Amino acid sequence: MVLRSASAALLSLTLLVSPPLLAQQIGRTAPILDVPDDYAEGVGIEAGPFTLLPSAELRAEYDSNIYAKQKDAEDDLIGIIVPRLEARLNRESTQVAVRAEATGRKYLDHTREDSVAALVGASLMQGAGGPDRVTADVSWQRAIEDRGDPEARDVQALGPRKLDLLALETGWRHEGPRVSLAVRGSATKIDYVSDIDNERDLTNYAGRASVELGVGGTSSIVLIGFVTHRDFRLGGAVSDRNRDATTYGGRAGAKFGEGGLLRGEASIGVFQLEPADDTLPSRTGVSAEASLAYLPRRRLAIILNAFRGDVATVRSGAQSRTDTVVQLGVQAEARANFQLEGSVFYRRSQFIGADVAETTTGIRGEAEYRLTPRLSLVGSATYSRRKSNVPSDEFDRLRAAIEMRLRI
Image (tube, rainbow, N blue to C red; front, side, top):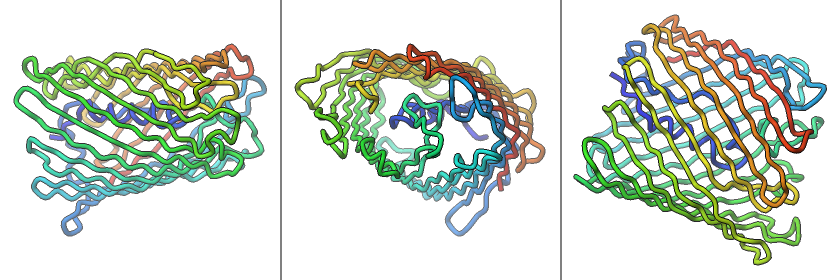
């Protein structure tokens, strides 16, 4: 049986909220259902000590408002192809995974929006199954900015922004009988490809330490401390202000392990933003993060992903930005080869110092029918609406797609 845990949802939430700008993508949630996956049997290719897991998606998508404009919305049909390859090595306490992925997008009419995104990475876990685990992950990503992002490019003739992300993360975790400790550190270099976006280039450093105190069963109280430092490459060259900043804070909450009705982690606390420029005020705000799955039945999961905190901004006049993201969804297995997913989402971006606030709400649905163990037919639709006190930033958008998913 393949155990699908709420930790996968936490990974998907992490992609939603970090790094800046990419944080605004809200899509499907990682699978949570804790049911036997008979359709996964026989998938994969043995190649010496490695198991190769090739997969691909071929999608036809309709977008009613490709530029996320308030008026005179332009629609288009988009062809999307996503090949993937993952190689896994499991040797006693050592697990290694190497992954590669590309996403090609071809527009029928608006060819300036054509793009190719890519990702390559490798991860290591040493000590799997033991009380102490060390993890490391390194990746490079060519990402494409979505036109609906809060600070997305609004010049249509230039196409969407492209950016390269080089990321390194390492961590250590100790599992004790009552007390568990974890430390994680990361560095992400964000480099926008076009020279006209050099002001956006930065390196983000982050650290996190947590203590878990068992209170019975698989439940724990969790205490978290975190710090993030943003180092803009151009420093004060863009304006007369140093845009570097350090954010630190702490949260307290609860963690629920595998096997129960409730799984995942949720915590709330405060953050303190300290700008490097002494002329800018420091600021305190609410920090919150949640990744919870409630499984009342084996074939039904209710999922909550949420985040609130400080993120980077380059908006004119803004000193900082606070994002609040909430996604509430449900996953259900109607039959062994037919799964459904739906969610509603809310995102609010508050630009501090610029007196600008944007609120995006939406709904998403997906149905996947497995024709064979290796081939699925998928239909999905997402409707979103953004409101703002800057009228030109408002828009409505519908995206609907038919997709084939292949696993080898």
